[in-house]
Length: 143
Image (cartoon, rainbow, N blue to C red; front, top):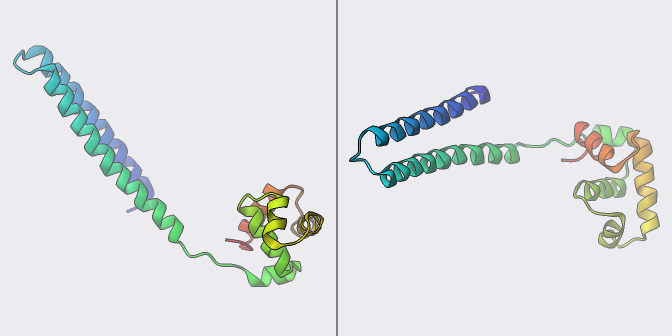
């Protein structure tokens, strides 16, 4: 099923649930034998069931995105001249580590990490860490 159709069906279910709830509240006004507590309980049950159903679908889609195979373009890495250590630094940058944290992880000095990052910026033709990560992901250099 296409993502657009799933979205349309989800919104349709939400609208249907809201219409049912509106009709229940109208019925409670005109039929005195229906208590307000019963209407609130039914409304809560409908919204809970709808939330569980829609939440399950969202989790399945997120899981599918995570399991999608990622392809690393080794030819592009070689063409750009990115060394294995620079690639390792780039992956750690993509995980959000600071220069100091990367240096501690790789057991090198912070100035060495700054040199690797500077070299990566030149090879990827970027000026910032976030740009480097975005470009590397676009070019399938990192997953």
